[in-house]
Length: 77
Image (cartoon, rainbow, N blue to C red):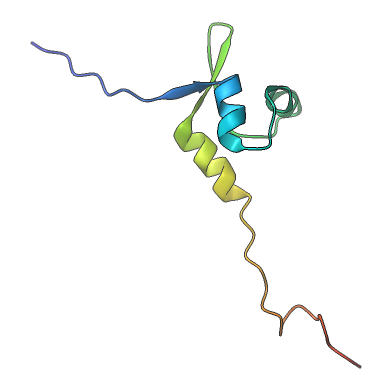
């Protein structure tokens, strides 16, 4: 019987930092220490991140701008 493995790509700490953009591996370490940041897994002593978790973290920081009419900018009175 053949075993089919579904490869779920995990990124190293350094790869995850690069994926997130202007974030360093040290920032990821600090976030883990403070209980914030993206979800991660530990395999022994190695920390790794699933791309899906990084994408969810990015999406969680998304801010929908308010329309100019509702934000009070330019209102007089």
